[in-house]
Length: 453
Image (cartoon, rainbow, N blue to C red; front, side, top):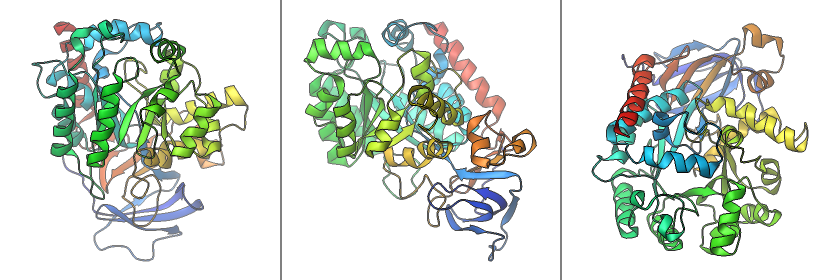
């Protein structure tokens, strides 16, 4: 593919929803290098020499969307146990996932990130927690794929050490030894983590879940992460089955269990958090613990509806995630804005979550969860030029409010997606890797995994 990297660019005539600050009905955004250098009403007063001009008429400009929870390898395993609960789905999936190798991961991540980019995502996490022995360097494979697609990437080195013989859910032969996990996790941090402003790769430490990980691993993982200044991530309180498991195994509910292990804090964000008590909600707010809300996956698995409105009212950070492609098949990140809004309204009423609040979840909310609120998540001078430009003309023009038009119905076409000023998507098509090549990489990964299994 030809490189369409843009280092001087001016978007003009767009409706700008900066998320932070007042919306601008018709304005401009100036990009130089990887930063936003101007945002304001009307035409730009100073256009950099040689800048590309992008006509944003009939377009809505938003910050690039931030995906706070995913399992990208699952692109190769979509459609497994379509009608099962979380525990039933996991039991059916573990054996299949145990056969993946670096080639499967590379193809799945390429397809998964390409799909995210085409839905306006500029930053994505990935929670990878199964590392079969002798199957290649799976962590390196996903980082290389992310670089090719061109998204900002937060790979989370996941792990499981508690198999069935120790009261866990996964088979014993796919869990790892604690010392091996910590050694590999520290190596991943040292090799790939870049804490600098504008970095494209940051690593998090991410034991899988209370029902697949020992308390010892949780405690030592937190110590390791904090010694290196990286963030912590895990699943929590996703289903009623998990509540029951934690009561039986630990004599307490999941959030209380994590709190006792030192796992609540401003450097932690947790996936799902569907089944929280009032006390849990208060503790999340008090400690600054983030939540990755995955509404489609929670609905697909019948897990329930997370208390997002309550968390927001309490002041806790909340972002959006699409979750793994095998529990949220073909879900676009932009679509989760609408899904989050509708689910909160179904539970709490029509004023529970507005279109603008849902957009904020997908942008600044995600940035806060990932510790990047000073870099991404809003359209402000000095921030990284991670920008999505959506076409809201045509059928969408029947709605006067551009943010409502964007959030309520089918997601508008994506005119341009910039990551650090570089064009990754233009007129709905990838400009880093080809749509066809990315799709075929995912299909090949699927075929290879099924053949291996």
